[in-house]
Image 1 (cartoon, rainbow, N blue to C red):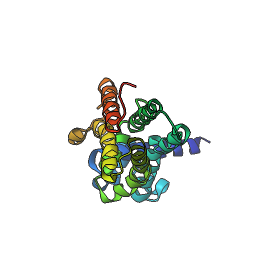
Image 2: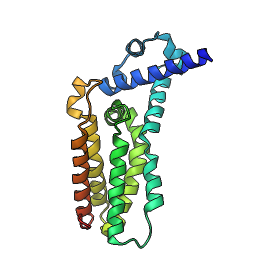
Image 3: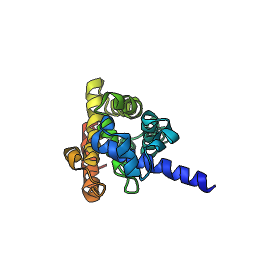
Length: 215
């Protein structure tokens, strides 16, 4: 039991260390020696537990996507999006959807490096494949369809722009893109400003969808 417990702790430490370093430098710019040193273990532990660096990268992505919970957005729409909804109910649906998206991008109880990792990885060829499955392949189509139906606008580009404007706000804010070179463990999100950003994003999204932000 003790051996199993220690093994799980080592795996968790390696995933956490690798994730923080990947968020800071990019996946291709981190060595196994750096990861092991940060995790407080030996370099061979990466091969023992994950079969090598590629297995560790996959493990980091699995951890990130479980924590990030992009599938919760589809569940929210399935449970709350009803035919024949009034304008007030449609506005409430969009408010709830954006609130959920802001929660997916950042939660105070979750390591901040996760948001940084996702956004930085999206800038690389390998990372885009993972991000496409979660954001482009999951959230974006649902949001664009929601906009088209509620607004009555048939222009697909306008629908995608509406969606991307919503997603960009929390992603850029939590990833702190201008501070990548100075990424630190204690680099916390300004929660009050984050909530204000959510409020502004909701108002702009409602207005762009042809709904009154005050209803």
